[in-house]
Image (cartoon, rainbow, N blue to C red; front, side, top):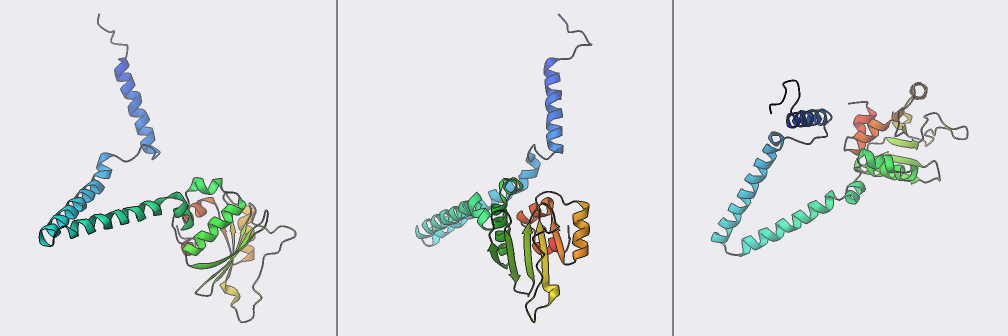
Length: 224
């Protein structure tokens, strides 16, 4: 019995829905790369593998079994080092965090993460732990100094004043007060920072860029 023209084919309807889902996932960047996107990487990998095999064969013919053995051992060592460096713990110790990892940290863990990111950017850091209000003091080799505070509101608490440099012979302009917040600062916080001067607010997106590898200098300068 022929299907009425006004009814839809279940198979075709399922395909159409699948195409719509794939289209939405691709628009959101959640579907994954296409074959044409990964083809250049696969090509480079294939060329490298072929070159390595050809090198081992040429070395074996020229010297003997020593070259293949050394090549395999060296490849194993390099692969082991690469795998260890990509582990989450090793990555975080080098000052690289994912946005989800930042959200899961408590205030002490966030202070430790920022300290690691500062060291990654060649700052000497001293962590001043506190139960609910940790603080970081950092110094760069070019003479700049940072005071890093962690709180959802930029303005100081009633019992806390923003520190100012008091050491003799140091340039006051080298001192920068940084306030870190995983959320979004309000308009009054931005106005307060402008009034204070030498005060930089790092919100959630800026913190995520920093944790992903962006330089702190770019963030302090307000560069995208």
